[in-house]
Length: 117
Length: 114
Image (cartoon, rainbow over all chains, first blue to last red; front, side, top):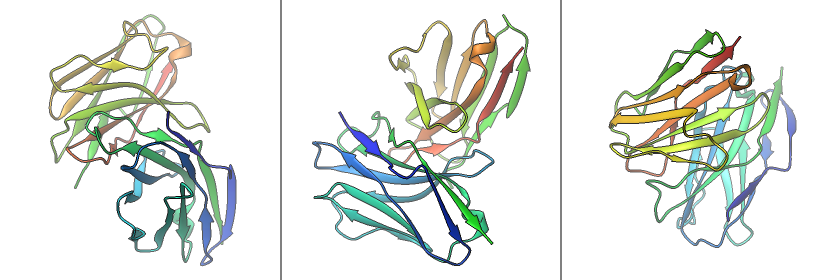
């Protein structure tokens, strides 16, 4: 069975600084997808970034980038130039690649990020 | 693109009544839709997976007769909470997936059962 672990329940960062959120996972699959979703106070789940396991290059979306270490089963999210609007709960998630049409997302417990002015 | 709507955004009902929540993919056809429940300050808990035209697959511990799911078309899934009770009060979120690995989420529905 797949598991996703986020070991940081809460983090804080000052505006304009950089913060890294940790995520580790456990799977015997070789092909899979990893995601970071954010859930701001509105509770709308928003996709931040997606990583395909078969790609060695780390995914990047503007100020958001990941450090994907497949052998270590680690998938951290780096937020650069933090903004007040980044304040949210961040969830790391995993899904298998072989049958992704029906396979569910496995979520971590989340990291609550607070950005201070 | 990849917008999912959910209606209503919040609902208050009396104990014993049924409540229907709609989930629509607005700009893509969703082969699969998912229904989640989220308690305050917790992660999402998957309730069921539904594919268009077939019966939903419920997670262990979720009552099928309590939470009725209908996936009538490639853009619409509904969740009906039957004979709602106060313990069913929660935040319900749907997501939709096209033929791709990414799930796109609706804005959620806050249900309060009095």
